[in-house]
Image (tube, rainbow, N blue to C red; front, side, top):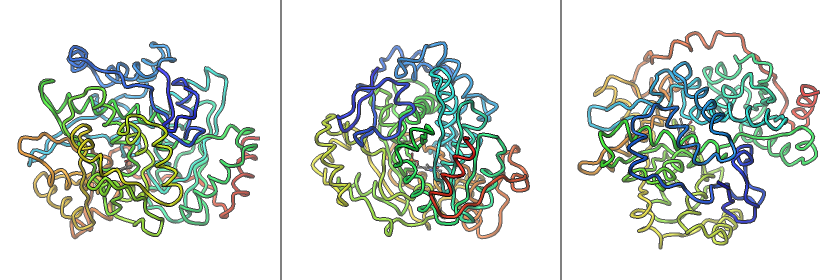
Length: 470
Ligand SMILES: *Cc1c(COP(=O)(O)O)cnc(C)c1O
Protein backbone atom coordinates (compact mmCIF):
# COMPACT_ATOMS: atom_id res chain seq x y z
CA UNK A 1 0.00 0.00 0.00
CA UNK A 2 1.46 3.35 -1.10
CA UNK A 3 0.43 6.83 0.03
CA UNK A 4 -0.30 9.81 -2.19
CA UNK A 5 -0.83 13.53 -1.56
CA UNK A 6 -4.16 15.32 -2.01
CA UNK A 7 -2.28 17.88 -4.14
CA UNK A 8 -0.71 15.26 -6.41
CA UNK A 9 2.84 16.63 -6.53
CA UNK A 10 4.53 14.26 -4.05
CA UNK A 11 6.09 10.93 -5.06
CA UNK A 12 4.21 7.96 -3.52
CA UNK A 13 5.47 7.03 -0.04
CA UNK A 14 5.46 3.95 2.17
CA UNK A 15 3.53 3.70 5.45
CA UNK A 16 6.70 4.11 7.56
CA UNK A 17 7.52 7.26 5.64
CA UNK A 18 4.09 8.89 6.05
CA UNK A 19 4.03 7.90 9.72
CA UNK A 20 6.76 10.44 10.48
CA UNK A 21 5.36 13.11 8.14
CA UNK A 22 3.20 16.17 8.69
CA UNK A 23 2.15 18.08 5.60
CA UNK A 24 3.29 16.67 2.26
CA UNK A 25 6.03 18.73 0.57
CA UNK A 26 3.43 19.97 -1.94
CA UNK A 27 1.27 21.32 0.91
CA UNK A 28 -1.28 18.49 0.70
CA UNK A 29 -2.23 15.66 3.06
CA UNK A 30 -1.20 12.04 2.62
CA UNK A 31 -3.82 9.34 1.98
CA UNK A 32 -3.66 5.67 0.94
CA UNK A 33 -3.86 5.29 -2.84
CA UNK A 34 -7.10 3.33 -2.30
CA UNK A 35 -9.26 2.19 0.62
CA UNK A 36 -9.28 -1.57 1.32
CA UNK A 37 -12.79 -3.03 0.93
CA UNK A 38 -14.14 -5.16 3.78
CA UNK A 39 -16.45 -7.95 2.60
CA UNK A 40 -19.31 -9.48 4.60
CA UNK A 41 -17.33 -12.57 5.67
CA UNK A 42 -14.46 -10.45 7.00
CA UNK A 43 -16.84 -8.15 8.86
CA UNK A 44 -18.48 -11.21 10.41
CA UNK A 45 -15.11 -12.57 11.54
CA UNK A 46 -14.06 -9.21 12.98
CA UNK A 47 -17.20 -8.97 15.15
CA UNK A 48 -15.73 -11.48 17.58
CA UNK A 49 -12.29 -9.89 17.93
CA UNK A 50 -10.81 -8.09 20.93
CA UNK A 51 -9.85 -4.43 20.46
CA UNK A 52 -6.12 -5.09 19.86
CA UNK A 53 -6.94 -7.98 17.50
CA UNK A 54 -9.29 -5.71 15.54
CA UNK A 55 -6.67 -2.93 15.50
CA UNK A 56 -4.15 -5.38 14.08
CA UNK A 57 -6.50 -6.60 11.31
CA UNK A 58 -7.40 -3.07 10.21
CA UNK A 59 -3.95 -1.51 10.45
CA UNK A 60 -2.35 -4.48 8.70
CA UNK A 61 -4.33 -3.53 5.57
CA UNK A 62 -2.62 -0.12 5.55
CA UNK A 63 0.81 -0.65 7.12
CA UNK A 64 2.40 -2.66 4.32
CA UNK A 65 6.04 -2.18 5.26
CA UNK A 66 5.71 -3.18 8.93
CA UNK A 67 6.05 -6.96 9.40
CA UNK A 68 2.83 -8.47 10.79
CA UNK A 69 4.47 -9.78 13.96
CA UNK A 70 5.89 -6.32 14.74
CA UNK A 71 2.56 -4.60 14.11
CA UNK A 72 0.81 -7.10 16.37
CA UNK A 73 3.25 -6.33 19.16
CA UNK A 74 2.77 -2.55 18.66
CA UNK A 75 -1.02 -2.74 19.00
CA UNK A 76 -0.81 -5.22 21.89
CA UNK A 77 1.51 -2.81 23.71
CA UNK A 78 -0.76 0.16 22.94
CA UNK A 79 -4.32 -0.98 23.64
CA UNK A 80 -4.12 -2.40 27.17
CA UNK A 81 -6.51 -2.37 30.08
CA UNK A 82 -3.74 -0.78 32.16
CA UNK A 83 -3.67 2.29 29.88
CA UNK A 84 -7.35 2.55 28.82
CA UNK A 85 -9.11 1.34 31.95
CA UNK A 86 -11.19 -1.52 30.49
CA UNK A 87 -10.46 -4.62 28.43
CA UNK A 88 -12.96 -3.50 25.78
CA UNK A 89 -10.91 -0.22 25.49
CA UNK A 90 -13.86 1.80 24.04
CA UNK A 91 -17.03 0.52 25.78
CA UNK A 92 -20.43 1.72 24.53
CA UNK A 93 -23.26 2.67 26.92
CA UNK A 94 -26.84 3.78 26.26
CA UNK A 95 -28.46 6.91 27.72
CA UNK A 96 -32.07 6.91 28.92
CA UNK A 97 -33.24 8.43 25.61
CA UNK A 98 -31.59 5.66 23.58
CA UNK A 99 -28.58 7.67 22.34
CA UNK A 100 -25.42 5.61 22.68
CA UNK A 101 -22.08 6.95 23.94
CA UNK A 102 -18.78 5.37 22.93
CA UNK A 103 -16.14 6.03 25.61
CA UNK A 104 -12.90 7.12 23.94
CA UNK A 105 -11.51 9.16 26.81
CA UNK A 106 -10.29 6.72 29.41
CA UNK A 107 -6.63 7.03 28.43
CA UNK A 108 -3.99 8.93 30.46
CA UNK A 109 -5.11 12.47 29.49
CA UNK A 110 -8.87 11.84 29.60
CA UNK A 111 -9.46 12.84 25.95
CA UNK A 112 -9.91 10.79 22.78
CA UNK A 113 -6.57 12.00 21.38
CA UNK A 114 -4.89 9.33 23.53
CA UNK A 115 -6.47 6.64 21.29
CA UNK A 116 -4.25 7.68 18.39
CA UNK A 117 -1.36 9.33 20.18
CA UNK A 118 -0.55 6.27 22.29
CA UNK A 119 -0.23 4.25 19.08
CA UNK A 120 2.02 6.94 17.55
CA UNK A 121 4.28 6.81 20.60
CA UNK A 122 4.89 3.08 20.20
CA UNK A 123 5.16 3.16 16.40
CA UNK A 124 7.47 6.21 16.28
CA UNK A 125 9.87 4.50 18.66
CA UNK A 126 9.72 1.33 16.56
CA UNK A 127 10.36 3.01 13.18
CA UNK A 128 13.13 5.26 14.56
CA UNK A 129 15.01 2.36 16.15
CA UNK A 130 14.64 0.25 12.99
CA UNK A 131 16.14 3.04 10.92
CA UNK A 132 18.70 4.23 13.48
CA UNK A 133 17.13 7.69 13.52
CA UNK A 134 16.16 10.12 16.25
CA UNK A 135 13.39 12.68 16.35
CA UNK A 136 12.90 15.90 18.28
CA UNK A 137 9.27 16.86 18.43
CA UNK A 138 8.39 20.51 18.85
CA UNK A 139 4.82 21.64 19.34
CA UNK A 140 2.54 24.31 20.73
CA UNK A 141 -0.47 23.52 22.85
CA UNK A 142 -3.25 25.22 24.69
CA UNK A 143 -4.14 21.96 26.41
CA UNK A 144 -5.28 18.62 24.99
CA UNK A 145 -2.95 17.86 22.09
CA UNK A 146 0.26 18.69 23.92
CA UNK A 147 -0.52 16.59 26.94
CA UNK A 148 -1.64 13.62 24.81
CA UNK A 149 1.67 13.83 22.89
CA UNK A 150 3.73 14.06 26.07
CA UNK A 151 2.00 11.08 27.69
CA UNK A 152 2.45 9.06 24.51
CA UNK A 153 6.13 9.88 24.02
CA UNK A 154 7.39 9.98 27.63
CA UNK A 155 10.35 7.67 28.12
CA UNK A 156 10.47 6.66 24.44
CA UNK A 157 13.98 5.99 23.09
CA UNK A 158 15.34 8.31 20.41
CA UNK A 159 12.69 10.99 20.98
CA UNK A 160 12.64 14.33 22.80
CA UNK A 161 9.52 16.47 23.12
CA UNK A 162 9.65 20.27 23.46
CA UNK A 163 6.13 21.48 24.17
CA UNK A 164 5.39 25.20 24.26
CA UNK A 165 2.40 26.45 26.23
CA UNK A 166 1.25 29.98 27.12
CA UNK A 167 2.56 30.85 30.60
CA UNK A 168 -0.30 31.20 33.08
CA UNK A 169 -3.06 30.66 30.49
CA UNK A 170 -4.00 27.01 31.09
CA UNK A 171 -6.20 25.58 33.82
CA UNK A 172 -4.59 24.25 37.00
CA UNK A 173 -5.53 20.73 35.91
CA UNK A 174 -3.99 21.14 32.44
CA UNK A 175 -0.78 22.60 33.89
CA UNK A 176 -0.50 19.82 36.43
CA UNK A 177 -1.14 17.19 33.78
CA UNK A 178 1.75 18.35 31.61
CA UNK A 179 4.21 19.87 34.04
CA UNK A 180 4.14 16.97 36.51
CA UNK A 181 5.82 14.69 33.94
CA UNK A 182 9.41 14.27 35.08
CA UNK A 183 10.69 12.04 32.24
CA UNK A 184 14.12 13.09 30.96
CA UNK A 185 12.87 13.39 27.36
CA UNK A 186 9.87 15.65 28.08
CA UNK A 187 10.54 19.40 28.12
CA UNK A 188 7.75 21.81 29.07
CA UNK A 189 8.40 25.38 27.99
CA UNK A 190 6.00 28.02 29.34
CA UNK A 191 6.23 31.02 27.02
CA UNK A 192 5.48 34.51 28.30
CA UNK A 193 2.81 35.12 25.67
CA UNK A 194 -0.38 33.73 24.18
CA UNK A 195 -1.04 30.43 22.40
CA UNK A 196 -0.61 32.16 19.01
CA UNK A 197 2.88 33.32 20.08
CA UNK A 198 3.78 29.71 20.91
CA UNK A 199 2.55 28.65 17.50
CA UNK A 200 4.55 31.41 15.78
CA UNK A 201 7.74 30.25 17.53
CA UNK A 202 7.13 26.66 16.41
CA UNK A 203 6.58 27.86 12.84
CA UNK A 204 9.73 30.00 12.91
CA UNK A 205 11.85 27.04 14.07
CA UNK A 206 10.16 24.71 11.56
CA UNK A 207 10.96 27.14 8.76
CA UNK A 208 14.64 27.20 9.67
CA UNK A 209 15.67 24.40 7.30
CA UNK A 210 19.26 24.11 8.58
CA UNK A 211 18.16 23.85 12.23
CA UNK A 212 15.39 21.43 11.30
CA UNK A 213 17.81 19.18 9.45
CA UNK A 214 20.63 19.30 12.00
CA UNK A 215 18.36 18.53 14.95
CA UNK A 216 15.84 16.18 13.23
CA UNK A 217 12.88 18.38 14.14
CA UNK A 218 9.40 16.92 13.69
CA UNK A 219 5.83 17.51 14.85
CA UNK A 220 2.79 15.49 15.88
CA UNK A 221 -0.10 17.45 14.48
CA UNK A 222 -3.62 16.44 13.71
CA UNK A 223 -2.95 15.85 10.01
CA UNK A 224 -0.61 12.93 10.69
CA UNK A 225 -1.87 9.83 8.85
CA UNK A 226 -1.00 7.47 11.73
CA UNK A 227 -3.48 9.29 13.95
CA UNK A 228 -6.29 8.93 11.41
CA UNK A 229 -5.49 5.23 10.95
CA UNK A 230 -5.62 4.52 14.70
CA UNK A 231 -8.98 6.31 14.86
CA UNK A 232 -10.55 4.18 12.10
CA UNK A 233 -10.35 1.20 14.46
CA UNK A 234 -12.79 2.53 17.05
CA UNK A 235 -15.52 3.13 14.48
CA UNK A 236 -15.47 -0.60 13.76
CA UNK A 237 -15.30 -1.42 17.49
CA UNK A 238 -18.19 0.97 18.23
CA UNK A 239 -20.30 -0.47 15.41
CA UNK A 240 -19.88 -4.04 16.73
CA UNK A 241 -20.74 -2.94 20.30
CA UNK A 242 -23.81 -0.99 19.23
CA UNK A 243 -25.35 -3.73 17.04
CA UNK A 244 -26.31 -7.40 17.32
CA UNK A 245 -25.61 -8.25 13.69
CA UNK A 246 -23.94 -6.82 10.60
CA UNK A 247 -27.31 -6.32 8.91
CA UNK A 248 -27.84 -3.23 11.08
CA UNK A 249 -26.77 0.32 10.33
CA UNK A 250 -25.43 2.85 12.82
CA UNK A 251 -24.90 6.61 12.62
CA UNK A 252 -21.99 8.30 14.38
CA UNK A 253 -22.17 11.80 15.84
CA UNK A 254 -18.77 13.42 16.29
CA UNK A 255 -17.84 16.64 18.14
CA UNK A 256 -15.55 18.16 15.52
CA UNK A 257 -12.75 20.69 15.25
CA UNK A 258 -9.98 19.88 12.80
CA UNK A 259 -12.09 17.13 11.17
CA UNK A 260 -9.54 14.46 12.16
CA UNK A 261 -11.89 12.28 14.18
CA UNK A 262 -14.79 12.23 11.73
CA UNK A 263 -12.40 11.86 8.78
CA UNK A 264 -11.54 8.44 10.23
CA UNK A 265 -15.28 7.67 10.29
CA UNK A 266 -15.54 8.66 6.64
CA UNK A 267 -12.74 6.24 5.76
CA UNK A 268 -14.35 3.42 7.81
CA UNK A 269 -17.56 4.02 5.84
CA UNK A 270 -15.65 4.02 2.52
CA UNK A 271 -14.17 0.65 3.56
CA UNK A 272 -17.67 -0.76 3.81
CA UNK A 273 -18.58 -0.43 7.50
CA UNK A 274 -22.42 -0.11 7.58
CA UNK A 275 -22.50 3.52 8.73
CA UNK A 276 -25.78 5.23 7.87
CA UNK A 277 -24.90 8.86 8.58
CA UNK A 278 -21.85 10.76 9.78
CA UNK A 279 -23.12 13.64 11.90
CA UNK A 280 -20.70 16.55 12.32
CA UNK A 281 -21.31 18.51 15.54
CA UNK A 282 -19.64 21.91 15.94
CA UNK A 283 -19.75 24.57 18.64
CA UNK A 284 -20.09 28.33 18.00
CA UNK A 285 -17.13 27.98 15.61
CA UNK A 286 -19.36 26.52 12.93
CA UNK A 287 -17.28 26.65 9.73
CA UNK A 288 -17.92 22.91 9.19
CA UNK A 289 -21.62 23.07 10.03
CA UNK A 290 -21.96 25.84 7.46
CA UNK A 291 -20.23 23.69 4.83
CA UNK A 292 -22.37 20.63 5.43
CA UNK A 293 -25.57 22.71 5.39
CA UNK A 294 -24.77 24.97 2.43
CA UNK A 295 -21.80 23.50 0.56
CA UNK A 296 -19.86 26.72 1.11
CA UNK A 297 -16.50 26.54 2.93
CA UNK A 298 -15.52 29.89 4.44
CA UNK A 299 -12.59 29.62 6.88
CA UNK A 300 -12.76 32.30 9.55
CA UNK A 301 -10.10 34.78 10.59
CA UNK A 302 -8.53 34.62 14.06
CA UNK A 303 -10.72 37.59 15.04
CA UNK A 304 -13.81 35.52 14.19
CA UNK A 305 -12.69 32.41 16.06
CA UNK A 306 -14.48 32.41 19.39
CA UNK A 307 -13.20 31.18 22.74
CA UNK A 308 -15.90 28.78 23.94
CA UNK A 309 -16.64 26.36 26.75
CA UNK A 310 -15.79 23.46 24.40
CA UNK A 311 -12.32 24.83 23.69
CA UNK A 312 -10.86 21.87 21.77
CA UNK A 313 -13.32 22.60 18.96
CA UNK A 314 -12.37 26.29 18.66
CA UNK A 315 -10.98 26.23 15.13
CA UNK A 316 -11.32 28.61 12.20
CA UNK A 317 -10.32 26.15 9.48
CA UNK A 318 -10.34 22.36 9.55
CA UNK A 319 -7.02 20.95 8.37
CA UNK A 320 -8.17 17.36 7.76
CA UNK A 321 -11.18 18.50 5.76
CA UNK A 322 -9.00 18.47 2.60
CA UNK A 323 -8.90 14.66 2.80
CA UNK A 324 -12.70 14.44 2.52
CA UNK A 325 -12.88 16.99 -0.31
CA UNK A 326 -10.27 14.96 -2.21
CA UNK A 327 -12.58 11.91 -2.08
CA UNK A 328 -15.68 14.01 -2.78
CA UNK A 329 -14.10 15.34 -5.98
CA UNK A 330 -13.20 11.87 -7.23
CA UNK A 331 -9.59 12.35 -6.06
CA UNK A 332 -8.96 15.11 -8.60
CA UNK A 333 -5.81 16.66 -7.12
CA UNK A 334 -5.81 19.54 -9.62
CA UNK A 335 -9.19 20.68 -8.37
CA UNK A 336 -8.17 20.23 -4.70
CA UNK A 337 -4.98 22.26 -5.23
CA UNK A 338 -6.95 25.03 -6.89
CA UNK A 339 -9.58 25.14 -4.08
CA UNK A 340 -6.89 25.40 -1.41
CA UNK A 341 -5.13 28.09 -3.40
CA UNK A 342 -8.33 30.10 -2.92
CA UNK A 343 -8.23 29.30 0.81
CA UNK A 344 -4.56 30.33 1.06
CA UNK A 345 -5.44 33.63 -0.60
CA UNK A 346 -7.89 34.31 2.23
CA UNK A 347 -11.02 33.13 0.42
CA UNK A 348 -13.13 30.00 0.46
CA UNK A 349 -15.01 27.89 -2.05
CA UNK A 350 -18.49 26.81 -3.03
CA UNK A 351 -19.33 23.13 -3.57
CA UNK A 352 -23.09 23.54 -3.14
CA UNK A 353 -23.62 21.63 -6.41
CA UNK A 354 -22.23 18.57 -4.59
CA UNK A 355 -24.61 18.79 -1.59
CA UNK A 356 -26.86 15.91 -2.71
CA UNK A 357 -23.80 13.62 -3.08
CA UNK A 358 -22.35 14.83 0.24
CA UNK A 359 -25.62 13.73 1.93
CA UNK A 360 -26.59 10.63 -0.03
CA UNK A 361 -23.33 9.15 -1.24
CA UNK A 362 -21.14 10.16 1.70
CA UNK A 363 -23.78 10.27 4.47
CA UNK A 364 -22.72 13.62 5.98
CA UNK A 365 -25.07 15.93 7.87
CA UNK A 366 -24.32 18.48 10.58
CA UNK A 367 -25.54 20.67 13.39
CA UNK A 368 -24.09 23.11 15.89
CA UNK A 369 -24.38 23.79 19.60
CA UNK A 370 -23.88 26.94 21.68
CA UNK A 371 -22.93 27.64 25.27
CA UNK A 372 -26.54 27.57 26.51
CA UNK A 373 -27.28 24.33 24.58
CA UNK A 374 -24.15 22.73 26.04
CA UNK A 375 -25.10 23.63 29.61
CA UNK A 376 -28.72 22.51 29.08
CA UNK A 377 -27.57 19.16 27.67
CA UNK A 378 -25.10 18.58 30.51
CA UNK A 379 -27.88 19.34 33.01
CA UNK A 380 -30.48 17.21 31.23
CA UNK A 381 -28.23 14.16 30.95
CA UNK A 382 -27.29 14.48 34.59
CA UNK A 383 -30.99 14.50 35.49
CA UNK A 384 -31.90 11.54 33.28
CA UNK A 385 -28.77 9.41 33.67
CA UNK A 386 -26.96 10.66 36.77
CA UNK A 387 -23.71 11.31 34.90
CA UNK A 388 -21.83 14.47 33.93
CA UNK A 389 -20.97 14.80 30.24
CA UNK A 390 -17.88 16.66 29.10
CA UNK A 391 -18.79 19.92 27.25
CA UNK A 392 -17.55 18.66 23.83
CA UNK A 393 -19.47 15.41 24.15
CA UNK A 394 -22.51 17.45 25.19
CA UNK A 395 -22.30 19.38 21.90
CA UNK A 396 -22.47 16.01 20.12
CA UNK A 397 -25.43 14.76 22.16
CA UNK A 398 -27.31 18.02 21.57
CA UNK A 399 -26.89 17.69 17.79
CA UNK A 400 -27.68 13.96 17.81
CA UNK A 401 -30.96 14.57 19.67
CA UNK A 402 -31.89 17.27 17.19
CA UNK A 403 -31.15 15.25 14.03
CA UNK A 404 -32.14 11.73 15.11
CA UNK A 405 -34.66 10.08 12.79
CA UNK A 406 -37.19 7.40 13.75
CA UNK A 407 -35.48 4.06 14.38
CA UNK A 408 -31.98 5.47 13.89
CA UNK A 409 -29.20 4.17 16.17
CA UNK A 410 -26.76 7.00 16.90
CA UNK A 411 -23.43 6.49 18.61
CA UNK A 412 -22.03 9.76 20.04
CA UNK A 413 -18.28 9.76 20.47
CA UNK A 414 -17.17 10.81 23.95
CA UNK A 415 -14.16 13.00 23.19
CA UNK A 416 -13.22 13.93 26.77
CA UNK A 417 -14.24 13.35 30.39
CA UNK A 418 -16.10 15.96 32.44
CA UNK A 419 -13.38 15.87 35.12
CA UNK A 420 -11.20 18.02 32.82
CA UNK A 421 -13.73 20.85 32.65
CA UNK A 422 -14.88 21.46 36.22
CA UNK A 423 -15.75 25.14 35.68
CA UNK A 424 -18.28 24.40 32.94
CA UNK A 425 -19.80 21.52 34.87
CA UNK A 426 -20.21 23.79 37.91
CA UNK A 427 -21.86 26.40 35.73
CA UNK A 428 -24.24 23.83 34.25
CA UNK A 429 -25.14 22.49 37.70
CA UNK A 430 -25.53 25.97 39.18
CA UNK A 431 -23.41 24.97 42.16
CA UNK A 432 -19.97 23.41 42.74
CA UNK A 433 -20.03 19.66 42.03
CA UNK A 434 -17.51 16.99 42.73
CA UNK A 435 -17.02 15.44 39.28
CA UNK A 436 -15.53 11.98 39.70
CA UNK A 437 -11.94 11.69 38.57
CA UNK A 438 -10.06 8.45 37.78
CA UNK A 439 -8.14 7.25 40.84
CA UNK A 440 -4.79 7.58 39.05
CA UNK A 441 -5.30 11.34 38.87
CA UNK A 442 -6.16 11.97 42.52
CA UNK A 443 -3.97 14.74 43.89
CA UNK A 444 -2.51 15.55 40.45
CA UNK A 445 -2.33 19.28 41.20
CA UNK A 446 -0.11 18.74 44.26
CA UNK A 447 2.62 16.79 42.46
CA UNK A 448 5.95 18.58 41.88
CA UNK A 449 6.06 20.32 38.48
CA UNK A 450 8.88 20.69 35.96
CA UNK A 451 8.66 23.61 33.53
CA UNK A 452 11.00 26.26 32.12
CA UNK A 453 9.54 29.75 31.77
CA UNK A 454 10.96 31.49 28.68
CA UNK A 455 10.47 34.91 27.08
CA UNK A 456 8.35 35.13 23.92
CA UNK A 457 11.31 34.56 21.60
CA UNK A 458 12.18 31.87 19.05
CA UNK A 459 15.86 32.47 19.79
CA UNK A 460 15.39 31.65 23.49
CA UNK A 461 13.63 28.38 22.59
CA UNK A 462 16.30 27.47 20.05
CA UNK A 463 19.07 28.08 22.61
CA UNK A 464 17.35 25.88 25.19
CA UNK A 465 16.92 23.10 22.64
CA UNK A 466 20.54 23.27 21.49
CA UNK A 467 21.71 23.22 25.11
CA UNK A 468 19.51 20.22 25.92
CA UNK A 469 20.34 18.19 22.82
CA UNK A 470 24.06 18.97 23.00
C1 LIG B 1 -9.41 17.47 19.58
C2 LIG B 1 -10.76 17.42 20.21
C3 LIG B 1 -11.95 17.52 19.46
C4 LIG B 1 -11.95 17.76 17.96
O1 LIG B 1 -11.46 16.66 17.24
P1 LIG B 1 -10.99 16.83 15.71
O2 LIG B 1 -10.33 15.56 15.36
O3 LIG B 1 -10.04 18.00 15.69
O4 LIG B 1 -12.22 17.12 14.91
C5 LIG B 1 -13.16 17.38 20.11
N1 LIG B 1 -13.22 17.20 21.45
C6 LIG B 1 -12.10 17.11 22.21
C7 LIG B 1 -12.24 16.93 23.68
C8 LIG B 1 -10.83 17.22 21.63
O5 LIG B 1 -9.73 17.13 22.40
